[in-house]
Length: 390
Image (cartoon, rainbow, N blue to C red):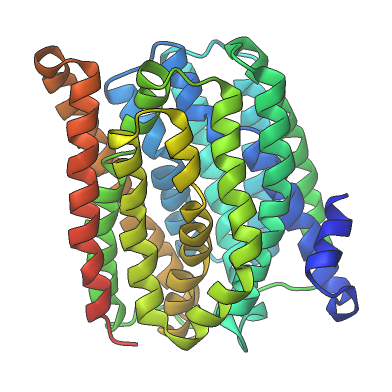
Protein backbone atom coordinates (compact mmCIF):
# COMPACT_ATOMS: atom_id res chain seq x y z
CA UNK A 1 0.00 0.00 0.00
CA UNK A 2 2.79 2.45 0.95
CA UNK A 3 4.68 1.61 -2.22
CA UNK A 4 1.57 2.23 -4.31
CA UNK A 5 1.01 5.60 -2.64
CA UNK A 6 4.64 6.55 -3.22
CA UNK A 7 4.30 5.63 -6.91
CA UNK A 8 1.12 7.68 -7.07
CA UNK A 9 2.84 10.73 -5.61
CA UNK A 10 6.04 10.35 -7.60
CA UNK A 11 6.28 9.01 -11.14
CA UNK A 12 7.68 5.47 -10.94
CA UNK A 13 9.36 5.83 -14.32
CA UNK A 14 11.61 8.52 -12.84
CA UNK A 15 12.81 6.26 -10.05
CA UNK A 16 16.08 4.45 -10.66
CA UNK A 17 16.92 1.20 -8.90
CA UNK A 18 19.07 3.19 -6.47
CA UNK A 19 16.24 5.62 -5.74
CA UNK A 20 13.78 2.77 -5.15
CA UNK A 21 16.09 1.18 -2.59
CA UNK A 22 16.56 4.47 -0.78
CA UNK A 23 12.81 5.09 -0.93
CA UNK A 24 12.15 1.71 0.69
CA UNK A 25 14.73 2.44 3.37
CA UNK A 26 13.15 5.83 4.09
CA UNK A 27 9.62 4.44 4.32
CA UNK A 28 10.71 1.68 6.70
CA UNK A 29 12.61 4.17 8.86
CA UNK A 30 9.50 6.35 8.93
CA UNK A 31 7.43 3.37 10.09
CA UNK A 32 9.97 2.39 12.75
CA UNK A 33 10.53 5.86 14.18
CA UNK A 34 6.86 6.79 14.30
CA UNK A 35 5.71 3.63 15.99
CA UNK A 36 7.49 4.96 19.06
CA UNK A 37 8.91 8.50 18.87
CA UNK A 38 5.59 10.43 19.05
CA UNK A 39 4.76 8.60 22.28
CA UNK A 40 8.03 8.56 24.23
CA UNK A 41 7.52 11.75 26.29
CA UNK A 42 3.80 10.99 26.68
CA UNK A 43 4.72 7.54 28.05
CA UNK A 44 7.20 9.11 30.47
CA UNK A 45 4.63 11.55 31.89
CA UNK A 46 1.94 8.84 32.00
CA UNK A 47 4.38 6.73 34.04
CA UNK A 48 4.89 9.56 36.53
CA UNK A 49 8.16 11.02 35.24
CA UNK A 50 8.48 14.81 35.72
CA UNK A 51 11.27 17.26 36.51
CA UNK A 52 14.81 16.87 35.21
CA UNK A 53 14.22 13.34 33.88
CA UNK A 54 11.37 14.62 31.69
CA UNK A 55 13.57 17.47 30.50
CA UNK A 56 16.28 15.01 29.48
CA UNK A 57 13.85 12.62 27.78
CA UNK A 58 12.13 15.47 25.91
CA UNK A 59 15.44 16.72 24.52
CA UNK A 60 17.13 13.32 24.02
CA UNK A 61 15.94 12.98 20.42
CA UNK A 62 17.83 16.20 19.68
CA UNK A 63 20.82 16.09 22.04
CA UNK A 64 21.91 12.47 21.79
CA UNK A 65 21.32 12.18 18.05
CA UNK A 66 23.32 15.41 17.71
CA UNK A 67 26.14 14.14 19.93
CA UNK A 68 26.36 10.94 17.90
CA UNK A 69 26.46 12.89 14.64
CA UNK A 70 29.25 15.12 15.93
CA UNK A 71 31.33 12.13 17.07
CA UNK A 72 30.66 10.44 13.71
CA UNK A 73 31.95 13.56 11.95
CA UNK A 74 35.29 13.17 13.77
CA UNK A 75 35.73 9.55 12.72
CA UNK A 76 36.92 8.38 9.31
CA UNK A 77 33.92 6.19 8.56
CA UNK A 78 32.01 5.56 5.34
CA UNK A 79 28.34 6.56 5.10
CA UNK A 80 27.08 2.97 4.66
CA UNK A 81 28.98 1.86 7.78
CA UNK A 82 27.22 4.59 9.75
CA UNK A 83 23.85 3.32 8.47
CA UNK A 84 24.73 -0.22 9.50
CA UNK A 85 26.00 0.35 13.02
CA UNK A 86 23.66 3.21 13.88
CA UNK A 87 20.55 1.22 13.01
CA UNK A 88 21.91 -1.85 14.80
CA UNK A 89 22.52 0.02 18.08
CA UNK A 90 19.16 1.81 17.87
CA UNK A 91 17.23 -1.36 16.99
CA UNK A 92 18.63 -3.38 19.90
CA UNK A 93 17.97 -0.51 22.31
CA UNK A 94 14.28 -0.25 21.33
CA UNK A 95 13.83 -3.97 21.91
CA UNK A 96 15.37 -3.58 25.38
CA UNK A 97 13.06 -0.60 26.05
CA UNK A 98 10.08 -2.84 25.34
CA UNK A 99 11.19 -5.23 28.08
CA UNK A 100 12.15 -2.98 31.01
CA UNK A 101 10.09 -0.82 33.44
CA UNK A 102 9.15 2.65 32.17
CA UNK A 103 10.70 4.42 35.16
CA UNK A 104 14.13 4.97 36.61
CA UNK A 105 17.60 5.57 35.20
CA UNK A 106 17.70 2.30 33.19
CA UNK A 107 14.75 3.40 31.05
CA UNK A 108 16.29 6.82 30.50
CA UNK A 109 19.77 5.50 29.68
CA UNK A 110 18.41 2.89 27.26
CA UNK A 111 16.42 5.54 25.42
CA UNK A 112 19.53 7.70 25.26
CA UNK A 113 21.39 4.79 23.65
CA UNK A 114 18.61 4.36 21.09
CA UNK A 115 18.94 8.03 20.17
CA UNK A 116 22.73 7.76 19.92
CA UNK A 117 22.25 4.97 17.40
CA UNK A 118 19.71 7.05 15.50
CA UNK A 119 22.19 9.92 15.32
CA UNK A 120 24.90 7.69 13.85
CA UNK A 121 22.55 6.45 11.14
CA UNK A 122 21.34 10.01 10.45
CA UNK A 123 24.89 11.16 9.76
CA UNK A 124 25.27 8.40 7.17
CA UNK A 125 21.92 9.29 5.64
CA UNK A 126 22.67 13.03 5.46
CA UNK A 127 25.95 12.35 3.67
CA UNK A 128 24.13 10.23 1.09
CA UNK A 129 21.46 12.92 0.67
CA UNK A 130 24.12 15.58 0.09
CA UNK A 131 25.33 13.63 -2.92
CA UNK A 132 21.86 12.88 -4.29
CA UNK A 133 20.49 16.41 -3.90
CA UNK A 134 23.36 18.29 -5.54
CA UNK A 135 21.29 19.58 -8.47
CA UNK A 136 18.03 20.42 -6.64
CA UNK A 137 18.35 20.62 -2.88
CA UNK A 138 14.82 21.58 -1.85
CA UNK A 139 12.92 19.34 -4.26
CA UNK A 140 15.04 16.23 -3.61
CA UNK A 141 15.15 16.56 0.18
CA UNK A 142 11.42 17.28 0.43
CA UNK A 143 10.73 14.22 -1.72
CA UNK A 144 12.52 11.94 0.73
CA UNK A 145 10.81 13.67 3.64
CA UNK A 146 7.50 12.67 2.07
CA UNK A 147 8.68 9.06 1.72
CA UNK A 148 9.33 9.05 5.46
CA UNK A 149 5.92 10.61 6.06
CA UNK A 150 4.24 7.75 4.19
CA UNK A 151 5.60 5.39 6.80
CA UNK A 152 4.59 7.73 9.59
CA UNK A 153 0.93 8.00 8.62
CA UNK A 154 0.18 4.31 8.90
CA UNK A 155 2.43 3.38 11.82
CA UNK A 156 1.54 6.24 14.16
CA UNK A 157 -2.21 5.89 13.69
CA UNK A 158 -2.21 2.11 14.08
CA UNK A 159 -0.01 2.33 17.17
CA UNK A 160 -2.31 4.94 18.73
CA UNK A 161 -5.44 2.87 18.00
CA UNK A 162 -3.81 -0.30 19.32
CA UNK A 163 -2.48 1.20 22.56
CA UNK A 164 -5.47 3.45 23.32
CA UNK A 165 -5.07 4.51 26.94
CA UNK A 166 -3.04 1.49 28.10
CA UNK A 167 0.56 2.46 28.77
CA UNK A 168 1.68 -1.18 29.03
CA UNK A 169 0.62 -1.94 25.43
CA UNK A 170 3.13 0.59 24.03
CA UNK A 171 5.76 -2.12 24.60
CA UNK A 172 4.65 -3.85 21.41
CA UNK A 173 5.20 -0.79 19.14
CA UNK A 174 8.56 -0.29 20.88
CA UNK A 175 9.57 -3.86 20.02
CA UNK A 176 8.38 -3.45 16.43
CA UNK A 177 10.45 -0.26 16.16
CA UNK A 178 13.50 -2.28 17.19
CA UNK A 179 12.83 -5.11 14.73
CA UNK A 180 12.21 -2.82 11.74
CA UNK A 181 15.24 -0.68 12.59
CA UNK A 182 17.42 -3.81 12.63
CA UNK A 183 16.15 -4.68 9.14
CA UNK A 184 17.11 -1.16 7.99
CA UNK A 185 20.66 -1.80 9.18
CA UNK A 186 21.06 -4.38 6.44
CA UNK A 187 18.81 -2.73 3.84
CA UNK A 188 21.04 0.35 3.87
CA UNK A 189 23.94 -1.76 2.63
CA UNK A 190 22.15 -2.51 -0.66
CA UNK A 191 22.37 1.02 -2.01
CA UNK A 192 25.13 1.84 -4.49
CA UNK A 193 25.65 5.29 -2.97
CA UNK A 194 28.44 5.72 -0.44
CA UNK A 195 30.55 8.62 0.75
CA UNK A 196 34.20 8.36 1.77
CA UNK A 197 36.06 10.70 4.07
CA UNK A 198 38.26 13.36 2.44
CA UNK A 199 42.02 12.96 2.43
CA UNK A 200 42.59 16.30 4.21
CA UNK A 201 41.32 17.32 7.63
CA UNK A 202 37.83 18.87 7.22
CA UNK A 203 37.09 22.44 8.28
CA UNK A 204 33.99 24.47 9.07
CA UNK A 205 33.24 27.46 6.83
CA UNK A 206 33.40 30.83 8.60
CA UNK A 207 30.18 31.71 6.77
CA UNK A 208 28.39 29.16 8.98
CA UNK A 209 29.43 30.65 12.34
CA UNK A 210 26.52 33.11 12.43
CA UNK A 211 24.15 30.33 11.30
CA UNK A 212 25.35 28.14 14.17
CA UNK A 213 24.87 30.93 16.73
CA UNK A 214 21.35 31.76 15.52
CA UNK A 215 20.47 28.05 15.44
CA UNK A 216 21.72 27.56 19.02
CA UNK A 217 19.71 30.50 20.37
CA UNK A 218 16.57 29.43 18.54
CA UNK A 219 16.88 25.80 19.65
CA UNK A 220 17.15 26.88 23.30
CA UNK A 221 13.81 28.72 23.11
CA UNK A 222 12.31 26.08 20.80
CA UNK A 223 13.09 23.26 23.23
CA UNK A 224 11.80 25.30 26.16
CA UNK A 225 8.29 24.04 25.33
CA UNK A 226 9.18 20.39 24.74
CA UNK A 227 8.71 19.11 28.33
CA UNK A 228 5.54 21.19 28.66
CA UNK A 229 3.68 19.59 25.75
CA UNK A 230 3.37 16.07 27.26
CA UNK A 231 2.43 17.56 30.64
CA UNK A 232 -0.39 19.48 28.96
CA UNK A 233 -1.43 16.41 26.98
CA UNK A 234 -1.73 14.22 30.08
CA UNK A 235 -2.91 16.58 32.82
CA UNK A 236 -4.79 19.38 30.98
CA UNK A 237 -6.25 17.80 27.83
CA UNK A 238 -6.36 14.22 29.23
CA UNK A 239 -5.25 12.74 25.93
CA UNK A 240 -4.85 9.06 25.10
CA UNK A 241 -2.26 7.49 22.80
CA UNK A 242 -4.86 7.69 20.04
CA UNK A 243 -5.14 11.47 20.44
CA UNK A 244 -1.37 11.84 20.23
CA UNK A 245 -1.37 9.69 17.09
CA UNK A 246 -4.08 11.81 15.44
CA UNK A 247 -2.03 14.97 16.05
CA UNK A 248 0.98 13.39 14.37
CA UNK A 249 -1.03 12.03 11.44
CA UNK A 250 -2.68 15.40 10.69
CA UNK A 251 0.75 16.96 10.39
CA UNK A 252 1.90 14.08 8.20
CA UNK A 253 -1.01 14.44 5.78
CA UNK A 254 -0.29 18.13 5.31
CA UNK A 255 3.34 17.22 4.56
CA UNK A 256 2.20 15.14 1.59
CA UNK A 257 0.19 17.95 0.05
CA UNK A 258 2.79 20.68 0.61
CA UNK A 259 5.84 18.81 -0.66
CA UNK A 260 6.14 20.35 -4.14
CA UNK A 261 5.50 23.94 -3.05
CA UNK A 262 7.97 23.78 -0.18
CA UNK A 263 10.69 22.19 -2.30
CA UNK A 264 10.44 24.97 -4.86
CA UNK A 265 10.30 27.66 -2.16
CA UNK A 266 13.48 26.37 -0.54
CA UNK A 267 15.33 26.37 -3.87
CA UNK A 268 14.01 29.83 -4.80
CA UNK A 269 14.28 31.73 -1.48
CA UNK A 270 16.44 29.93 1.07
CA UNK A 271 16.62 32.71 3.68
CA UNK A 272 12.86 33.35 3.79
CA UNK A 273 12.25 29.59 3.97
CA UNK A 274 14.42 29.32 7.07
CA UNK A 275 12.65 32.28 8.69
CA UNK A 276 9.20 30.90 7.87
CA UNK A 277 10.08 27.45 9.20
CA UNK A 278 11.02 28.96 12.56
CA UNK A 279 8.39 31.64 13.14
CA UNK A 280 5.56 29.20 12.39
CA UNK A 281 6.77 27.00 15.26
CA UNK A 282 5.23 29.58 17.61
CA UNK A 283 1.84 28.21 16.53
CA UNK A 284 2.08 25.11 18.71
CA UNK A 285 2.80 26.56 22.18
CA UNK A 286 0.16 29.20 21.47
CA UNK A 287 -2.38 26.50 20.62
CA UNK A 288 -1.65 24.43 23.72
CA UNK A 289 -1.74 27.50 25.95
CA UNK A 290 -4.98 29.00 24.60
CA UNK A 291 -7.01 26.08 23.20
CA UNK A 292 -10.21 25.31 25.13
CA UNK A 293 -10.19 21.70 23.89
CA UNK A 294 -8.21 19.21 21.85
CA UNK A 295 -10.05 19.98 18.61
CA UNK A 296 -8.38 23.39 18.38
CA UNK A 297 -5.00 21.63 18.59
CA UNK A 298 -6.12 19.33 15.78
CA UNK A 299 -7.13 22.38 13.72
CA UNK A 300 -3.69 24.06 13.85
CA UNK A 301 -1.70 20.86 13.37
CA UNK A 302 -1.55 21.13 9.53
CA UNK A 303 1.04 23.85 10.12
CA UNK A 304 3.30 21.03 11.33
CA UNK A 305 3.45 19.65 7.81
CA UNK A 306 4.94 22.91 6.57
CA UNK A 307 7.41 23.28 9.46
CA UNK A 308 8.45 19.63 9.12
CA UNK A 309 9.24 20.00 5.42
CA UNK A 310 11.09 23.25 5.95
CA UNK A 311 12.97 21.76 8.88
CA UNK A 312 14.19 18.80 6.84
CA UNK A 313 15.11 20.80 3.73
CA UNK A 314 15.88 24.52 4.18
CA UNK A 315 18.50 24.34 6.94
CA UNK A 316 20.30 21.27 5.64
CA UNK A 317 20.29 22.77 2.14
CA UNK A 318 21.89 25.94 3.50
CA UNK A 319 24.50 23.83 5.25
CA UNK A 320 25.26 21.78 2.14
CA UNK A 321 25.63 24.85 -0.08
CA UNK A 322 27.78 26.71 2.45
CA UNK A 323 30.33 23.89 2.69
CA UNK A 324 32.75 22.25 0.30
CA UNK A 325 32.25 18.56 -0.38
CA UNK A 326 35.25 17.77 1.83
CA UNK A 327 33.81 19.77 4.73
CA UNK A 328 30.14 18.73 4.62
CA UNK A 329 30.53 15.97 7.20
CA UNK A 330 32.17 18.26 9.76
CA UNK A 331 29.62 21.01 9.11
CA UNK A 332 26.78 18.55 9.70
CA UNK A 333 28.45 17.35 12.90
CA UNK A 334 28.92 20.84 14.33
CA UNK A 335 25.38 21.89 13.37
CA UNK A 336 23.99 18.80 15.07
CA UNK A 337 26.01 19.48 18.21
CA UNK A 338 24.84 23.10 18.30
CA UNK A 339 21.22 21.99 18.07
CA UNK A 340 21.72 19.23 20.61
CA UNK A 341 23.25 21.54 23.20
CA UNK A 342 20.51 24.10 22.62
CA UNK A 343 17.85 21.42 22.99
CA UNK A 344 19.07 20.04 26.30
CA UNK A 345 19.71 23.52 27.75
CA UNK A 346 16.22 24.77 26.88
CA UNK A 347 14.46 21.62 28.09
CA UNK A 348 16.30 21.54 31.43
CA UNK A 349 15.66 25.24 32.05
CA UNK A 350 11.97 24.75 31.29
CA UNK A 351 11.68 21.71 33.57
CA UNK A 352 13.42 23.52 36.42
CA UNK A 353 11.23 26.62 36.10
CA UNK A 354 8.07 24.52 35.87
CA UNK A 355 8.92 22.58 39.04
CA UNK A 356 9.44 25.95 40.77
CA UNK A 357 6.28 27.73 39.62
CA UNK A 358 3.87 24.75 39.71
CA UNK A 359 3.39 24.85 43.53
CA UNK A 360 2.70 28.61 43.29
CA UNK A 361 0.54 28.93 40.17
CA UNK A 362 -0.82 25.40 39.89
CA UNK A 363 -0.08 22.95 37.10
CA UNK A 364 -2.48 24.30 34.49
CA UNK A 365 -1.69 27.99 34.93
CA UNK A 366 2.04 27.31 35.19
CA UNK A 367 2.07 25.35 31.91
CA UNK A 368 0.01 28.03 30.13
CA UNK A 369 2.30 30.90 31.17
CA UNK A 370 5.46 29.02 30.22
CA UNK A 371 4.02 28.02 26.83
CA UNK A 372 3.10 31.64 26.08
CA UNK A 373 6.63 32.66 27.04
CA UNK A 374 8.00 30.02 24.67
CA UNK A 375 5.83 31.28 21.79
CA UNK A 376 7.00 34.89 22.22
CA UNK A 377 10.65 33.82 22.36
CA UNK A 378 10.26 31.64 19.25
CA UNK A 379 8.89 34.61 17.31
CA UNK A 380 11.67 36.94 18.47
CA UNK A 381 14.59 34.61 17.70
CA UNK A 382 13.24 33.50 14.31
CA UNK A 383 14.08 36.93 12.82
CA UNK A 384 17.76 36.09 13.14
CA UNK A 385 17.49 33.86 10.05
CA UNK A 386 16.67 36.90 7.91
CA UNK A 387 20.15 38.24 8.63
CA UNK A 388 21.97 35.27 7.13
CA UNK A 389 23.97 35.58 3.91
CA UNK A 390 22.87 33.13 1.20
